[in-house]
Length: 176
Ligand code: HEM
Ligand code: HEM
Image 1 (tube, protein in one colour):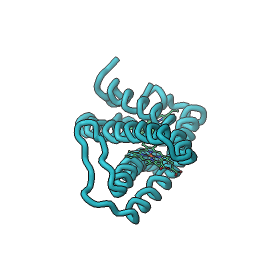
Image 2 (cartoon, helix red, strand yellow):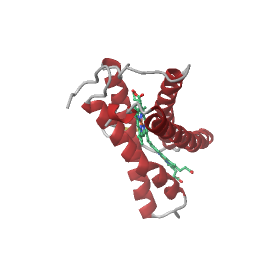
Image 3 (cartoon, helix red, strand yellow):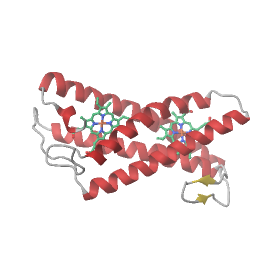
Image 4 (spheres, protein in one colour):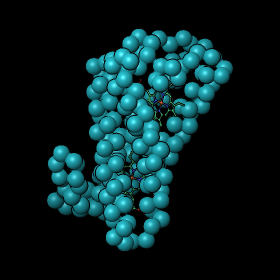
């Protein structure tokens, strides 16, 4: 299996980035919604810390993924079935990256503005002062960006289904 992306196929590392992120998000989104409904307790704090650790990992994963994409561009071979198709695909991918960053960075800023020190895996960091108004605002961003992510992923998967069954262009082979 090729390590680097080629003209018509993603390489091993890009595939790993894609599918690991998918599996982690599949768990992390429902986990976040579940967390909100829990009563305050030691167990809740522990679960929240796990949510934060996974979230910060997704942040790094997406950062490394984009750095990798910069040095090793995605496959370019794209047959168009209608005008603007390539642009729609690119916009979907671009917004997926923006949304994942919005979710992770808003989560981080919410906790920092609450006055908490966060473990960024390689280092620990906290603000000197808290600001609950900003913490609330970033929490709103965290929630709405999650809804946007669900909408974009739904479109993404619908597009794959249409490609597979209507256009019959075996798009899934590029990334599996
Ligand atoms: C959390 C869920 C998912 C996210 C966030 C996501 C994100 C992305 C992103 C950002 C790209 C563009 C990669 C690049 O070139 O930079 C991509 C490509 C792709 N994804 Fe997903 N994906 C998800 C789930 C899925 C699923 C479930 C499928 C299959 C049913 C899928 C199939 C594909 C395919 C076929 C491509 C290549 C499209 C092309 O190059 O034209 N993805 N995905
Ligand atoms: C891809 C990464 C992440 C996803 C998909 C995600 C998803 C979610 C979701 C769906 C909620 C529930 C929102 C609601 O309905 O109220 C939530 C809550 C929360 N998230 Fe995240 N999150 C991620 C990363 C992070 C990060 C990096 C942090 C902090 C560093 C964080 C901190 C929180 C906190 C503090 C809550 C609220 C728990 C509470 O106090 O009720 N999240 N998250």
